[in-house]
Length: 112
Length: 115
Image (cartoon, rainbow over the protein chains, first blue to last red):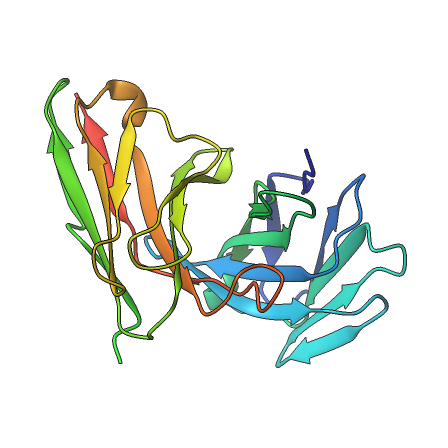
């Protein structure tokens, strides 16, 4: 099936640093979603991308929909302690029984 | 507007016991979903519903049943709990199917432990 790959599983950065996360697939996706999950909470949508090549920002977050439609990245600039959490990429699979598939997530830790 | 709410927040069961998790949304969304989240596994779809009175199986439906008697509520049942069902359960809803706006809105989760 169509799977989304995120690695590494964990990232550790210093407060104030920028960080980039990648999400890749061997299949084409027509929409890419980035979610953040705070500790003890449900995932919350950060950014949605609908068009190949699209670059979208939301405050300190920037995400891009890859030209090949097989990848996307999320950048966080000038990290702060509240950026801690799990970042998931997600996208709808194509074909019959389409569903929203999620990557396994990247746990981000920010050292003050 | 509370969004998506889930009850209970925490629950401990013994093997073989049954329970029902309740999800409610006040956004008038047609679609609702139940996921489980396990360490290193991401989110896996258990069952979903495309409208009141309809349900369908997701990736990992075994051991679970669901009902959508009212548009705003989606119930997840465990008839005979097993330790493998220890997990965090999330409910989500969306306005449209994946061909439309695929954005799903999540509840805060229910942490279930089966001893």
